[in-house]
Image 1 (cartoon, rainbow, N blue to C red):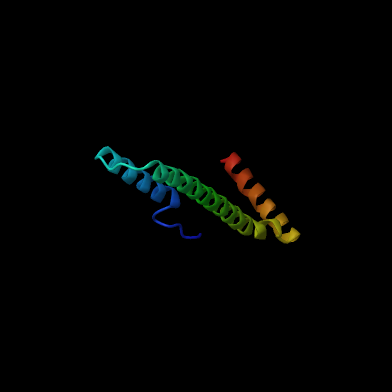
Image 2: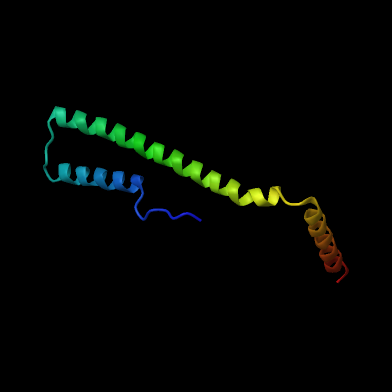
Length: 96
């Protein structure tokens, strides 16, 4: 399996948002221009987080397909042997 980071981009965005909210609650005032820049930055960061989610989903889907590929490409004789074995096990379980 692939390794995921300890801190995701969404967590970092949440941390920055909380820091800005706390600073404004304690009297840190922003000008109208600064507020517009923060709103624009939030949009850019949101796009980055969405892009990251799309990439992670693609990697997870690709990893699942690679894991499932050898089973789908199995030799027909081996598949038949596995099916026979499964039917024998099933028959023994039902007779027990």
